[in-house]
Amino acid sequence: ARRHGAGSIRAFSSATLQTTRDRSSLSIEVSEALENGDIIPWFQPQVSTDTGTVSGMEALARWNHPEHGIIPPDEFIYMIEESGLIERLGEIILYHAFTALQAWDKAGIDVPTVAVNFSATELANPALVDKIRWELDRFELAPSRLTVEILENVISYSENDTITRNITALSQLGCGIDLDDFGTGHASISNIRRFAVKRIKIDRSYVTRCDIDREQQDMLAAILTMAERINLETLTEGVETVGEHAMLAQLGCGHVQGFSIAHPMAFDLTMEWMENHRQK
Ligand code: C2E
Ligand code: CA
Ligand code: CA
Image (tube, rainbow, N blue to C red):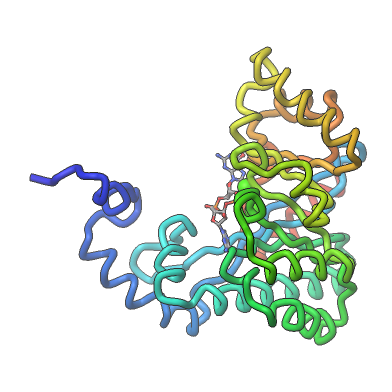
């Protein structure tokens, strides 16, 4: 029988990868998959609550596996982290994100920004800002086209000077800085200031049933009021219903992202989605 000690939680938590055998062979495959181009970003729109127009697309990693199909990041990013390949993943996702921006531009499709998730390991690399600047130049993109998503907890606990310096430099360069999963970690107002955060990305846990649950509503209202007072822009993620979307607009949240607008989709589907969205 399976034991259910603390250490086994992760090993048996996956929906897609049923067995430990699947997992151990996968962690070997993951580096190959990276270089083969089997790991690429899908894109999920972010929409302005004022105008309804797309303000950005978040790049979310997907592994297109020949046997298992599309594997979501929670099931393989830790393997990449453990294999020391997280920076390589970052480079690949950034490359595809900029390639997509260039393609949308060429097609006359208005996607103002692309948002990319950066891990603590990547943010601790002294060469990060140069790498990003080099890619921006190569693709002839203004720095403002890139939004850097950083987990709230990375700035909450970090005593790392390089992380501070990198985030500040990216902000000064003109990139957007979004504080991801806001409300789940321990960022203080002084941390938010010190790291030049421009926008908070309010976690999904605050959104669920906010249109009918008074407590959720009050919590959101408090966060949004705080943000407005200290001049932070706001984006809420995990917006699943039209009711939640409407409530967030009413409470003054600037931008929303979630299944109520669109699920993450492969690049090829974004063009058509944008066309349909524009016509609405
Ligand atoms: P995240 O950055 O918080 O991304 C949001 C997650 O919520 C995504 O899961 C997205 O597909 C999902 N989502 C979007 N809208 C809704 C909704 O309305 N309802 C619900 N229930 N979920 C929604 P995904 O794509 O599986 O990504 C999981 C996490 O993996 C991300 O969480 C992010 O932390 C990490 N990740 C994804 N791509 C990358 C990457 O390129 N680099 C790094 N370092 N991390 C990544
Ligand atoms: Ca994110
Ligand atoms: Ca998030």
